[in-house]
Length: 121
Image (cartoon, rainbow, N blue to C red):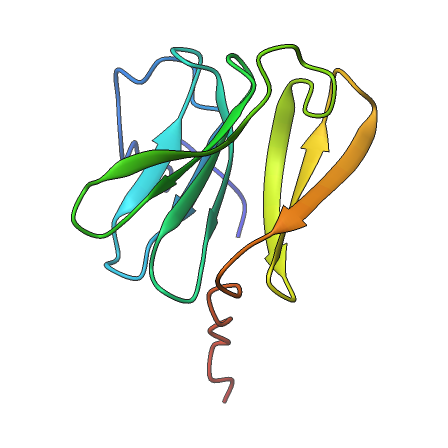
């Protein structure tokens, strides 16, 4: 399918420069942008959302009740320097650092959200 004016639709407007997005298990679209510089989003197998923040240098964890906590932060930007993406594997969170030009990791209490593959006919 070719993108045309007739088949493109806006699903969210008035966002502050959305730079990262993902769908939750609840079907909702989660997006982040320049206010707080949210870049990376990943869901774990407990339906919690990890959010990497470019500025400040933090990774948040949001649960299904709306509680948000700081999972990791680095005020000096030495180990985590402008995190732009997060991924979960083998009970570790991996994060990409735009400012530090490296990928870091730390232990985590959950795995990634299971992939849902479409049924092909």
